[in-house]
Image 1 (cartoon, rainbow, N blue to C red):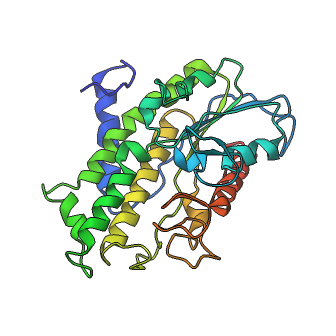
Image 2 (cartoon, one colour; image 1 turned 120 degrees about the horizontal axis):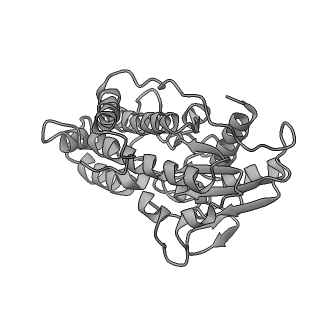
Length: 306
């Protein structure tokens, strides 16, 4: 089965597929060991990237829909999303943010409204690239809609989990595994276009309580679907971490730093808005505080050389 992995032998392709399937299907959602990153172009000292060209790729978690100030209506892009905050903090000399709400890995190669193919922004002299993608390939929006619709069937049970496991295999785990080679292909394309760039794969933040508790009706999921969906998010992040490692890229954990600030928390404490936001942000997306937290995670990762 062709997944866009380099033609370096079917054995390697099968090993990668088997590794993802085993990791995602296991009980322990642990970090995959990373491989040393390739030599990267760099800035002029800690906290500064003067002379650095930075390109941000990604979906709505990157673009920051509804967060003031919106600077691109087509992509719902904010000038206070995490790439903008990182660019300002690192004092980069050139910055291009082409993240776009609704983007999948396919939009790396094709236009999305007035937004051109995102990979077109990556040039040979690009020094830093951040990539946050995969949520729409798995189907974040449809998953949320499905789980909300099914919750009324059994508010104390797990109707959404039962729905996605109706075949005897968890379909969301399958979808995540099938997204891995797509992300792999994107990372290889970035490396081909910018061979000396530092590449950071940014994971997704903590959307639901990490302890598995619920908060119906603020977030209208059935009680036992909260831990199921929490674990699905962790599986997606684990896949991104693994694919980053395969490609010598760095992984940025945004889940850990946002635990305790999920969409079930009180408005003053939440960094992810619920399905009816109380702060300027899209439903089930980071607000300005969430974008700032992801920016801080990226900045801290940039300070680490390995």
